[in-house]
Image 1 (cartoon, rainbow, N blue to C red):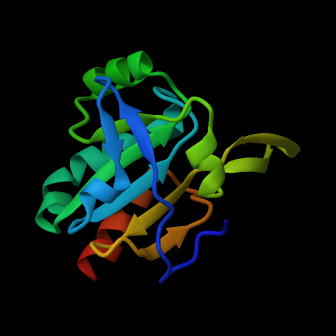
Image 2 (image 1 turned 45 degrees about the vertical axis):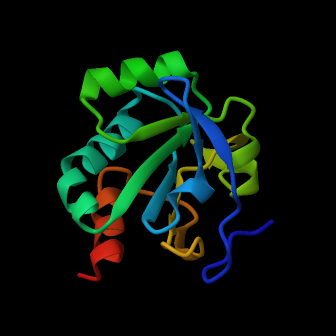
Length: 155
């Protein structure tokens, strides 16, 4: 299933760092930033996560929540969250089913070689559950949170 702007975002339920189930459908009425990243505590992923952390107040003021999804375990997410004081939810997609559904897992090129892996990408879901914007491949992890905030606030 391809992610299309204006269409309903695929529903999912995943476990957060504390073992709680988080369902996209339960977040209706808010903007939801669903960002997919390869691995906890790696340079690019840390820059991206810290960017969302640094814009957290503005994101909340825009009636939005952030869900970071990677194939890491709940324990890995707990350590990552604590180390960088991340105020948003990290979800474990260890079997990569949600990432696959969202086009965030598949063939990619790293250092000139084709490989299978997590594709850094983001989907902005509107309060009505429809996709507002889809960043299919995020090239600059450090700059991306600002672009997401601009899409949320229209500035």
